[in-house]
Every structure is written in C-alpha cells, then in structure tokens.
Length: 263
Image (cartoon, rainbow, N blue to C red; front, side, top):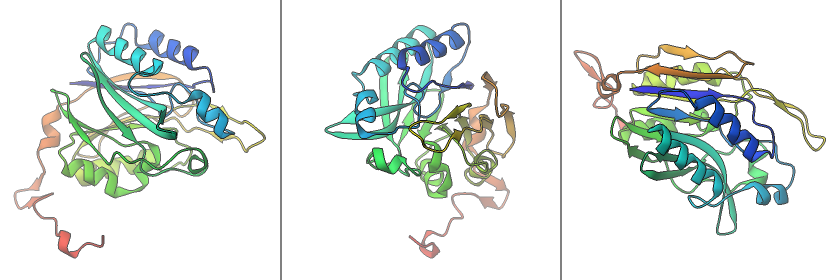
C-alpha cells in the first residue's frame, strides 16, 4: 500500500487557492492514502467567532468536501484532510475521510489545543475506525497525540494506520509518534504544515513541519524537513500492523491488564 502526506503552507482564508495548491501537488502522484494537514484549506489562527463562521463548512455537502471527493475519485485514492466544520450552530475542528466512491467518514477533534477552545466545540464523534479495503484507518488530529489514550483506543478498535492531520507548533510530536506506533504496533501518517501565522496582534505561530510516516516497529520511514513544502509517498506492508506479538511470549494486546489501569 502506498501512503503519503502533503506538507505545505496554507494561506489563511484563501480556501480556493490553498485547494488549488493541493490539486497542483497531487496531479501526477500515485497514492492509495493521502493525508493533508489540520485545517488545510482555511488556515489556523482565527481571531474571531465571525471569522470561524465565515470559513467553516457543512460536511459532506460543503464545497471543500465536494472537491476532496472529486480529487479522490479522479486519482482513485483515499484522502484525509482537516477542515473547519459547522453543524447545527456549532463549529468543530474536524477531518474528513473520502475515497473513490465518495464520502466515508468524519472525525471531530477530541482534544482542543490552546485558543482552539475559544472557537471550536470539543469533538463528539468519538475515536472511529474505517475499513477502506487495503487497511483499517483511524483519525486523530494534532494535539490528540498528547493523549496516549487516543492512539490506543484507535488501535484497540482495529486501526492499522493512524491518519494524523496536524498544525504542530510544539517540538515533541514527531518523536512522540514513534512511541505511539511502537506501543500500539501501528503505522502513522502525520501531515503537518509549515510557515508562520501572525494575525490580529497575536503572537506568531511557527509550524514545525517534520511530517512523517512511522512503522509499527517505531521506524521513521520518512520525515520531511521543518521548513519546506514536500509531497511524499511511502510503500508500506499493512500486515505488519496486524501482528501484535513482540516475542514468542508477549502479545501486545493480550497481555494488557485493564483492571489495574486508572480510568
């Protein structure tokens, strides 16, 4: 299976231009599963609720999801992309999963970071897994990485690949995802953005790049640089994520002792 990410620098508010950048980048690629960053088309640093309302879209009938479905159909691939979503008067930091046959699923970010709490509601979809044929995939968004329960829940539900749209500014995540993959024996595809946003007199946010694909054994199969646009596709063997044996005596999930863990 060929999985990849597109690391780039969306320009805040320029939804169509940002999407055009994605289209241009993927026009000649061959990929089964592509992951795009968090809030990939809208940009990240909102300064008002009115701004969120103007950029958030319905899912799946909104224009961004429709365009993503068109790309997935034409390129015969699955795409995970971050999107600002509106639903019944609330706004969510969300990600959609689309494929050659159309819309598949929606995840709303569980763990909001910093000023996201001013503009978005905590996600209510729960951590979900979808069987897309070649693999079972789960979605976690950016700061969800900070909570090991997120990756573990997806793995326990059968996820073989963690799709991880991100707008990372903290330095620890790329290395932490190695641990998340190792402790759950899953693949991960983190799609981060690059560049900087400084809006409304707020402190500048500098995004760290370093998008990556990590194996179930904790090997970094590829990591992007911190400051350059990059489209990368990596070949993986999904069956590696189905083997939870660490040695002849220890099965990662069989040997869990949930009755001893704090809730």
